[in-house]
Every structure is written in C-alpha cells, then in structure tokens.
Image 1 (cartoon, rainbow, N blue to C red):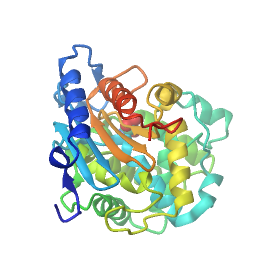
Image 2 (image 1 turned 30 degrees about the horizontal axis):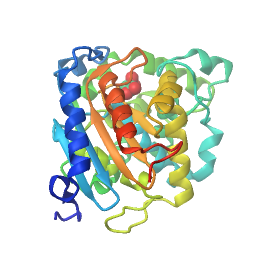
Image 3 (image 1 turned 90 degrees about the vertical axis):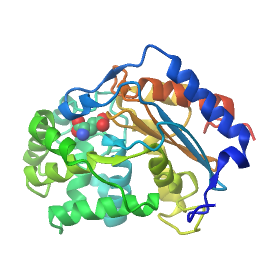
Length: 323
Ligand code: GLU
C-alpha cells in the first residue's frame, strides 16, 4: 500500500491487471501506429513505439503496463485541468466567453471563430483553451498562473515531481503560428483580457507539462468519482461540476473525432497531440493511455484502439455498463 492508499493491482485484482497487460501486448504487436505530431518539432523526437496504459479503480487499485512511468507531453489533456481551475475561479460566467458545443472542426481551426464572432465553440479546441487560460491568467502574473496550474495537477496526482518540459514549450512558442492567429483573432473581438503573447506563453507551457500514464490516471480520478479523491475523500469539485466536465470531455474531447470516440469507447476522454488520452469511467475508474502516433483527427491511434478494447472487455461505458 502506498501513501495514496493505492495498491499494486497485480496482487489484488489479477483480472484487471491481466486485461491491461493483454491489451498492451496486443498494441505492441500492431504495425499501424499512426503518425507522431511534427508541427511542434520537439514532439517529433519521441519514440513512436512507446505505449503505456494505467487503470486506477475506486478502491485505489492500480493496473499498469508498458511505458506507464515514462513522462510524455500531455498537451491538450492539460485543458481538462485548466477548465476545472477556470470554472473554480469564475463559475458559469466562463460560458459567456467559451461555448460548450462540439466543434466538428480540427483542433486548430479558425473558420468557426469568424462566424461566431470570436467566441470559441468549446474549451477543448485550441481557441477555447487559450480563452480558458486567459481567465486563469487574469489578476495573476504569468508565472503565478502557471504555478497555479502545475500545483493543481501535482495535488491531483499526489506527485510533486511533475514539471514542465521547457524544450517542448520553447518549440511550440517558436512555431505556434496558428495559435497566434487564433489568439489575435479572439483579442480583436475582446474575448481575451490579457496580451496575446502573455496568454499564449502560459498556454504553451501548460501544454508542455510532462506526465506519465500513472500520474495522469491519478490526476483524473476526481472526475470518475463525482469530484472527490476516492482515497482521501477530499472534494476537488462538486459532483455536478464533475459531471459537466465529463459531459464536455465526451462531446468535445477528441476534436472532430469526438463522435467516433464516443461510439467506439463510450467514455468521456480528452486527447493530446503528445499521444496521451485521459478517460473517465464514472464510478469505476480513471484510465490513462499513451501512444504517440496520431490518427488524422490528431488523436492517439493505438490509444483509442486500446481504450475501445478496455471498455469492451470491462463493460465500462457510460451508455450501459456491465455491473
Ligand atoms: N499545444 C498544442 C497546440 O496548441 C495542443 C494541441 C493538442 O494537443 O491537441 O497545438
């Protein structure tokens, strides 16, 4: 038993550990792995063969396999945590600036912004996430806002070692032309309060946070258990807020692949171009998977296949669960 009351699953619940290990073995044998993101040059350096999978259940049992302790760039998975923080800060007023409808567009699309007068469709496309970060930034210096985000994630994961990969942040800062375009466009409509460079500086750094599957699954547990950390009982957010964040993950967490992910996996999830996906099985457990190769919508190719297999084998789906 660790300090988090977590238990090594291989001894406690061998069935779940077996499912996780079997899926990892199956994924390792696949030759079609998708394409690693290259538009952030530093992300292209990662080993495309990496694969990690971790499930943490209600009792704190941890089933882990593959490269489950290797930190990777969480990229857009960070948007789940910044959304939670921004809602904590301004509550439902957030929805005056950002919508909560699926976009049906790629993660970095600018076309909708013009039609909708600078109001991003949802907090998980890039424009929406930049607007959410701008809310966290207001009243803070960039370093303080970033510190707040990192501290929150460390608290959730119960791991003070989590940090930002500065090389990835610098790489995105140098090449983030689309994000500069999105932010400038929103600024012109008065959607951002802070300077474009400052909001983007914080956004690029939050995306560059590096975490392992084990840390990510830990950090997502409050969403699986009605806003509470099930091992300590501490409330992170109210149950209704956890439900709503899950709803946005389900409908918007995979960009224009969100419908497909809901159909195949049936769980709220948020992907990042680093190849990570955090998925939440309400009342059952928190799941993190990492495989850097992406599909055409920018979501982890094998990560999605692995989650589909996992939710099928465990019967974990928000659309009907096996007991
Ligand atoms: N930092 C990335 C970007 O803004 C995040 C995209 C993603 O993970 O989907 O392009």
